[in-house]
Image (tube, rainbow over all chains, first blue to last red; front, top):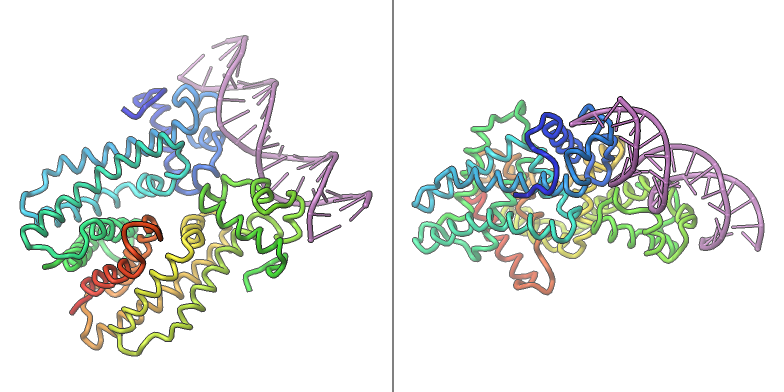
Length: 195
Length: 195
DNA sequence: GTCTATATCCTGATAGAC
DNA sequence: GTCTATCAGGATATAGAC
């Protein structure tokens, strides 16, 4: 597990993490003080340290737990064997999962540089494990000649960037519904690698 | 002009801005102190304030000047009238310009949230002006039936995300040369909107 | 234009009462 | 588990000598 200290299940611990995710997403890790987090949690600052060893552990736990949950959710999807069907399932899963938790997604790639080198390496490994699943789909699609691209690694990174970019503008009450966005982005992803 | 105080042309002013871009890109605006910037500039902290009104103005000037320069460089490209040729020119320009100044590009979209609301609005307007150029190409391509997509705005955002994502992994001494990356990404961009 | 010194405030983290 | 009080240090920004 990612946790180094403190409890996840306690009510205060839960509120602490919710407050930290929201504040880090809005202002950035370095710009948010433990006092601000305490206020948003509804306790005094000293009480926070019953639930996290320090500020760095708090950030690491948020990121690492997010990546754990993302990987677990993807595995629970049970992607089809057919490469094109798997790519569609991955695309829709990625969009749906990320749209549902914009704050956690945002800090998971904006606050990487505020992790200590050790913690960064661990979160990076989790991120690579996730991307490896997409790259595997692409390689299988290329081998089966139902997909075509110049470079599997770059196609993988391009699709991740394309899909994750949605989080910067998507709003649940915006012009387009979640399902419409999914359809449009699946259309673009399919074209990107079409044979 | 973006500048609110201080000089651009002085030697110290120039070093200050170079140091600030590098440090903000590596550690983030909020995590970098004026003392660190002074040390990297080669002066004492008090001297910085002869070249910038305060830390916020420094950030704003860096971002705003970057966007100004990006827009000016794009206009200097004199994109072709033909929509597909224009899209290729835009794609290669974007990749080339961004690969050449990774630090400035990085902070230009990572540090937006550390701008005051007024400053944020101004930089956002500059960014929209840049994206509007791409959207115009796409609309002309659609009208001429040499491009096809479900939604011009989303296709625009998707292409920007796709291309800008390159900055997160591209290294001049990496596996691929700049020209190879350009070719591969132009290939993917073309497919994305192909009729 | 740069320096040193300083004002004022805020930071993460801890100690010990309850 | 939460509180109050506090420590030691670092933050931005300014003043005034040179």
